[in-house]
Length: 319
Image 1 (cartoon, rainbow, N blue to C red):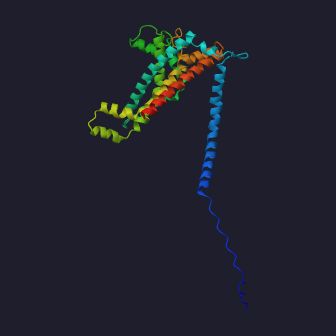
Image 2: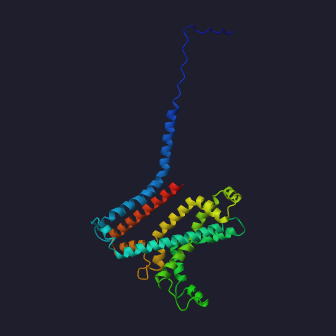
Image 3: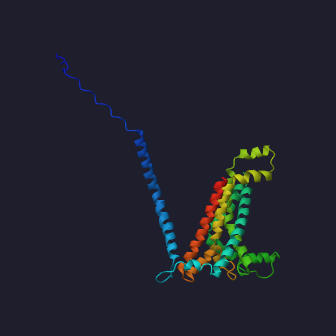
């Protein structure tokens, strides 16, 4: 039989003390650092794209605006001549006036049509999906392609619009819609922009309308508010952020108008439909003066930045 050996006598060895857990603050700092690094890695591709295709060209344009920069040849510093000559350029003065007039007319007309379409298709009923799609469908056509399409439709030689209006007795003889007068040329461009962009802005406004809770309308109806009072006191105030976004997009797009006038009217007749962006294009690629074009571009950018800052400030204060 095996005998049990008694335990060795002697002093007992103390058990190792448990390690103290690290303070939770260290874990928090490590986790926050990891999240910051991960966020930076996710944002890096976008930051690189913004730097390459926005910041670098912006800095280059600012540098070019301080030089006499021919398309072919070495640039030479001439600051601030490019900026001082802007006020002396008669074409710039007329383009500024026309661009402002077009922006006001286009913003009012486009917002009225888009908001009306949004109210028209707001309620869910039979056939409303078809109209929403039909109103939005022109956005599938490229803007340059749409401009060429309208150029063909409005042509006094091959366009069907003039023939149709003559058969209806609205006009007599041939009418040049895009070059006959400044009013007809401006109207043709505005109709093109309305057809192309009304559906897109309708979609944004429709999203804002559908975000308003139905309980608010029910409360107004219980209080005895009429439809006009509900629209003024409920719909418009709650739609203010969406309206501000749409107006900012409309005004910015109108100030940067180019395609519709370059393709439809070529700035005519007599430069009466020449926009600021068309002046920039002419300075750069017709007069071959990139420095002057860059200076006008910087001035236009400054106007856009000031407008957007004011717009966002007003919106934030009212909110």
